[in-house]
Image (cartoon, rainbow, N blue to C red):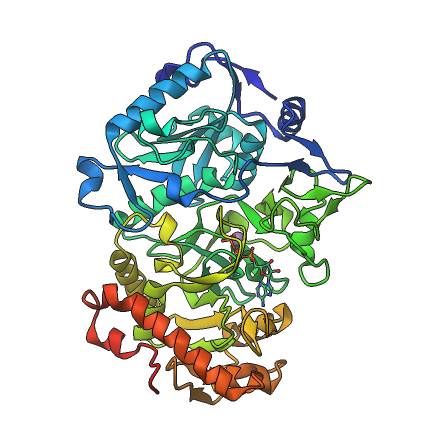
Length: 529
Ligand code: ATP
Ligand code: MN
């Protein structure tokens, strides 16, 4: 039920006369979103919306530089400082702009672990964002709501646009995080993913101080209770591979690793659905047919059914659904100490092995390198796949120095004795355009073998260029798939391409060499092998 403005839950911000909907539920949000023209209901049930931006805007995200953040944030790459006055000025304008408007407020948690979760107040202009937030964050119980007090606030008004010349932003779009005021303000973008990634970044900043490793990874748990983590940049398969019929899903994108185990930051999943195949991924496919799901930039056919093969609006079509839409989930979205850690990469060069085992040094190296090929569409302006190195497999969301996260992960892995794997979900038999994408079936078979301990006793060979240990046989996977060189018809072309990628790895790592042990640099790929 929507309670209309009972006590004005945004009064502290100075918003006096807005029409506030506090914690509206699914039915109400469908009605609001449709009334406001944000979207339509697909024939089978999902709320289907179109957004002005089909991906995140990482270049328009800023962090307020002040006493708190100056010495603790790594001011490189995506962590762009901005003056507190810019934030204050924009917030004042937004507050004024919000007067008389309709706003949706959701009181939710970021984090399933009561010890580490943050209560957040998410204030949005768009009803569909409010439903997205309800799906994606952890929903408090009725009991918890009675005493709910937000620690952080997000104010997201897409129709409010900054004037770069006057306001000090880069474009009319902005996402500004203020750690001192515990607030994020956003304007100019309708992409709902900003809501969750903003708060993800906050946890990534706060948790290391408490000895908790925040991770851009999915997680699931096997029948024997063994937990696996799947790190990887966008499009590498975190969501796809964590939804496995034989394992219970903990979460598909963001987790924390505490002294006792892992917990999900979220209460829902956000799956890419372009060309989704009902047979290969039945669980995620079903969510695109369910009532309560938000479908972003998916085209409906003449009968009002989602056409998942239509990428005419964007390749980054998405389904956002509460985690309990997946049939096999872990209650409470928490698990024990991980037994396996998997780094996913979608290598567009087709030269990294489909699976390899990493030494502790190689783990540090791969984690700091964070390699993949960017798949078109998830970020604004990226149309062609291109190689990407992104520290911690998530540089845009990690406010601290990558070395801090790497050290914490290394410590957790060492204490737990977890095994670490690098899995290439990208190309095989040739580079992008010549070879083909690894089959999901093979990737799943490789992963299952690793997670079930079936690779503990097989023989491994070392590939010369990347120095990686490759298993020589895996049940259910053809031999010539395992060693990437065997999968290429033209061996000389393979060697050439592998050397090229090895060089790119080394070039990228130069800026981190001084900060890591000699053993880590010794484990680097070697183009001269
Ligand atoms: P994001 O961080 O943006 O949520 P993600 O890591 O969760 O990204 P997915 O949403 O799982 O990535 O996207 C992987 C995409 O690649 C899916 O569309 C999936 O169908 C496709 N794909 C093709 N081959 C494979 C494979 N071998 N393993 C995993 N995914 C594959
Ligand atoms: Mn995902």
